[in-house]
Image (cartoon, rainbow, N blue to C red; front, side, top):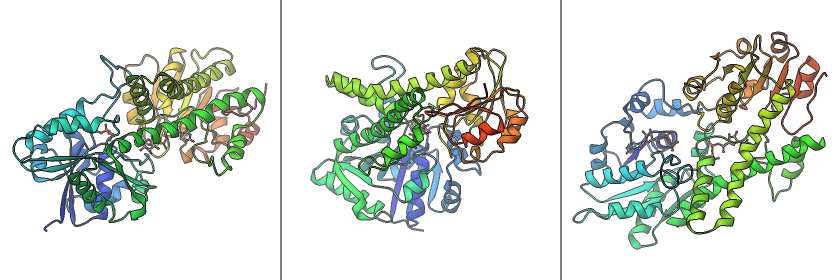
Length: 458
Ligand code: UDX
Ligand code: ADP
């Protein structure tokens, strides 16, 4: 079959895989290829067990794979063959040298730019999809502009706003698609080519264009604003616990103001995921770089509150359980950073587990999707940990249950059955406010929600 367009994506991760699967699904006449340096990842994309769990992804990949969606290890030839290249490689926080623990580590991005330069025999449009510090396109452009002869590269920014767990729906019905370009003749032409792709399924009024720097910065700012809401409500949850106000009621009352809105106001053990912390650090680093100390410190506080919320949760457990966890069995329900994903990157469960082990608690960890990643995250951590799929088996014989992920199934567990199998007095720390806490109290639990009054039998 002759394809109308050929698209390549470098980086087959949480962003590259699902977003390219959606393009392939919506544009059967385009050939979409995804490459990665990690050959195991490519094998997994070509197997029945995809490396990323995302509701609805399996179905689309199975429909398109081998027809117009391909996962390949041949980076060199794919770069040669395609003239629209998405870049979706990882940009973690730097762990070494200048800017350590704050700046984005752009080594993978730079290596990718050099690969594109090395293997290209014709002009190409290179599209940044990874979240990047503002002005990164300039680095890309500088590297790519050393191409010989008539080969020209146009760099675009097209940040991805999808959230994990709802990625396929977000990709299919995005609030907006943002495309940033240079405002030159060739920049605008390249931008129009990308608009054409999204216009196959996204209404034109939702495809917005901007200059390239606004586009790069908008992604960082969107994530910072979302994280800010979570930290705002979490900070108020601490005040609720001191004053007998109820955070769920406060969030409802506040969120009904249409100027504020009701989303992202769920108090909990804090935000996790690969984006929020990294992007805020990125923003903070940028502000420092440009000498904006006050602005940097304003955004930095969002991370501080997130940390505080986790420390507060642990302190509450310790205090409620008579000041010692040594030798006590604690069951953690949920290790993923949010529901409907197997992703555990920056999950509050990692830090909380480590702290509980330091207190010499014994942990049984249960999660419907994330146990494999949990075992990787806690490998080498000292202490006794057991991983058990079935929440009822995991809870049996434990002194306390901790709900750390808002999986729907945890709302409807048989808490009476769980209570019966536990050591008494039994404790339930609901780090996501998802159980009917009055009912659980009536069953016999000493229950500690977030930002609402604890109900105990003492
Ligand atoms: C986020 C952005 O939402 C998305 O637009 C961007 O592309 C990537 O980063 P993601 O990290 O996948 O997506 O998940 P999100 O739904 O934003 O949740 C992030 C964290 O905040 C989770 O740990 C979640 O549990 C927490 N959260 C969210 C709360 O604690 N309370 C809320 O009310 C909402
Ligand atoms: P994200 O959540 O942003 O998608 P991931 O870490 O899940 O991040 O995925 C990024 C992918 O990019 C990884 O699979 C990694 O192996 C891949 N990658 C990094 N550098 C390169 C490169 N130079 N060429 C091809 N793939 C790369």
